[in-house]
Amino acid sequence: MLVSATEMLKEAVEGHYAVGQFNINNLEWTKAILLTAEENKSPVILGVSEGAGKYMTGFPTVTAMVKSMIDCLGITVPVALHLDHGTYEGCYKCVKAGFSSIMFDGSHFPIEENIEKTTELVHVAHNLGLSIEAEVGSIGGEEDGVIGAGEVADPVECKKIADLGVDFLAAGIGNIHGKYPENWAGLDFNALAEIKKQIGDLPLVLHGGTGIPAEMIKKAISLGVAKINVNTECQLYFQEATRKYIEEGKDLQGKGFDPRKLLAPGVEAIKTIVKEKMELFGSIGKA
Ligand code: 13P
Image (cartoon, rainbow, N blue to C red):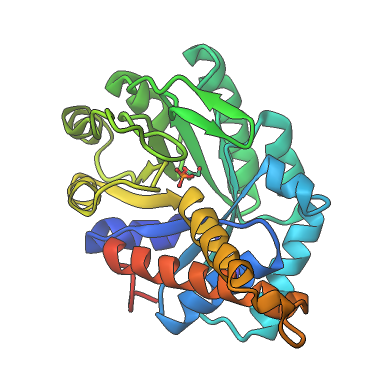
């Protein structure tokens, strides 16, 4: 069932768990994540960066694939198709393409401009029944060309953006896209608690879910995080499983070169890590 992410995240806040956003790159990723969500009766958010959308030939292709796959696989759990770190133009493209949720990342604009553009996009999204995520304070590191300095969000600015009617809010609290460096200081829970005080029960989004220790994830959920984004970890699991298949020479045995066989261990690996994350986030059995 393709739905906006509003209801599933409201329920997550009330139930003290988080819903995973897993980024997709192709048919294999999408199928693996949808099947894992269905098998574990978990709501799920499919994240699509602008780079991944382009790779898949455009957002309309992505919507058509996701909708058909939900239908053909008989997926009954709530699924949101969400633009990840959208530009202003990208948001309009996804609205037109039939996404059920968008993120406008105006964190690199001065706060006044972030407010102005977010206000407009909130109206557009809500008129069409879509959910919308906004961002304050950037997420460190790089994802598909989106580079952030990683500054911690100002709680007062968070309140200003929250008051525009966004459905969930990404606030930088020391989180980073990609692998965390050895000397990473960890999540800033004081900042998170301050933000929560300002925005109340609005669901918070934790980007950079790859490699955050389990105890920090649990503490973040207890402080109001209801959506956690994971991208790099699925890529690493896929890569390791594919490397193993080839290094063991399986692609050279019989019809091991068949792409459906060659990609199968990677798909299974994605299913394994997605299930692990759903267990950690507490979303299993919630759909
Ligand atoms: P990771 O790639 O670090 O898992 O972050 C994903 C993310 O935040 C997507 O927006």
